[in-house]
Image (cartoon, rainbow, N blue to C red):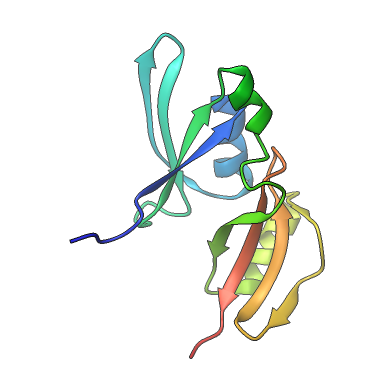
Length: 131
């Protein structure tokens, strides 16, 4: 039986730069950082230590991969960071220098605002409406 989406690979320019952003700025937990040799690492981060889904920070090495850093969503929002307190987390992320691309808005599905990470990937900070 399939149970959940475990890990999503995210191309980054540099492991340490990515860890500093996702953990230091977004407040994610560093779940794993294993040296695989030859400059390659297995680096997983997640919003919290018990999160069901994590990001695998994959350092781009080929020209094709380097060109895709920050563009994996083709210019669209493709990562969704859920919160249970939109106002608190929006203020905290804003205070830590996160780049927001719009003002927060309230949609039929919940409160949302688009931000971009240090590579230009677009994310939604999202608090879903309680049904």
